[in-house]
Image (tube, rainbow, N blue to C red; front, side, top):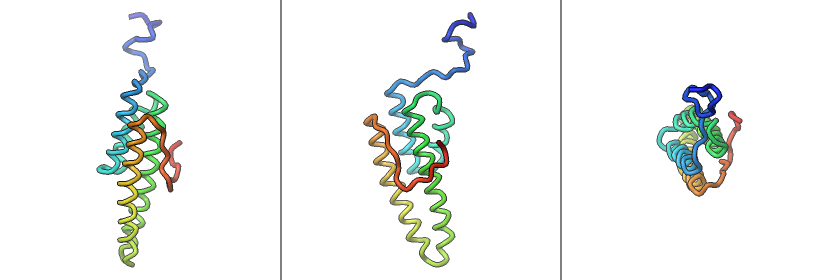
Length: 123
């Protein structure tokens, strides 16, 4: 194989995903967050962040949202002692469920989405 060939098997440049694959992985990132918290968003971000702007944007927004919800859940867990924590944990659960579904539908439709109430840890 020639080193001048852009399709060289040893090339370090990642191949871009097709638009349909970007939509699929973006949708799965948001749905996965409902069941596995931050793990799907982190994996998709690390594996696919350089393979397309759509998948990068969705993985970053999902990762930031899941990290924010993880912090809120930790605070809610600490506040269980004063019984307010149960309300915080219920709110976190509902927010993750509702906003993840909205984000997944947007991703599946090829639209960008930004979660509300999210701390931007990753840019």
